[in-house]
Image (tube, rainbow, N blue to C red):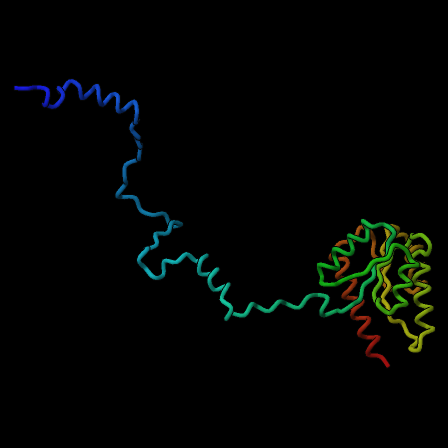
Length: 217
């Protein structure tokens, strides 16, 4: 029998297999055995892919949120829309102005700013301001002088009545300073550093006062 056309001897298979393993090493995966008795935890979900209710909630929310036929919810009225003051912040320190500006902007206002009392009084005369947060110690014209100038301008007007709310914002809470502010015609006094609660409380008190003034003949 001619052995040239027969299969290679069996002893050659391990050699060929060894060469093939060197070229293509096998991939071995270690998997933990399936636990047929394991029950899903209460927090686990086992959705049925064939069920029409198996759509993830997040996808449903995204789908309905983008539906143009569903109107968006109405935004609640802002603090400012109920108390429409036109606010001016006067302070020679930009960081102090930013603190007050950030708070009133969160409440829905769009304040304007002045770096001294002279600029603040000029804005007031334009008729664009009816609420002033003012520092006391400022160059050119301080907060006390600004309040006196505003009250004098109001008395000289045709209506001859107080219109603007003027609130002192100062780091000097001494009784003498409070007395000077009151004498100058200011309506309130806030001590630095101010926070949102103090600003809101003052705006609420001022709004009540403005409504009473507007209701009186």
